[in-house]
Length: 111
Image 1 (cartoon, rainbow, N blue to C red):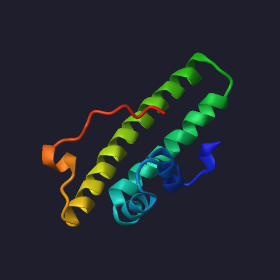
Image 2 (spheres, rainbow, N blue to C red):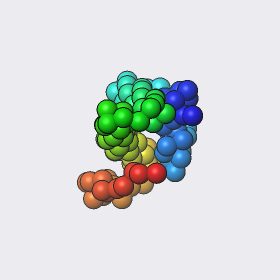
Image 3 (cartoon, helix red, strand yellow):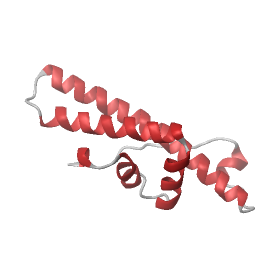
Image 4 (cartoon, rainbow, N blue to C red):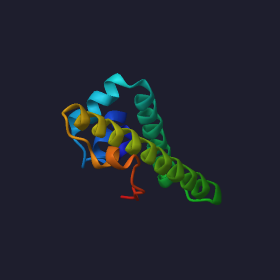
């Protein structure tokens, strides 16, 4: 059950393709990112609550609503993380593909 994990651990696990140290540093210094991580953790916890609850129309609808919120938060975190990654690379003198293009890819974040 992932609902008992800290927000930071959930995000590090979700974005395992990125460097853990970069995620942790952003979590520590960026209040907005940290708040999004906490919202994400709460949504994951609530989705699990409704997943394990007796199935009714309401619990199914609530679960779907939390799944949509989770997906939106994942997309928001992805953009922030990729932006931070691009900035870190640029500070080392290497411009990232994202910065060269001036945009971010449209990606599917479903697990």
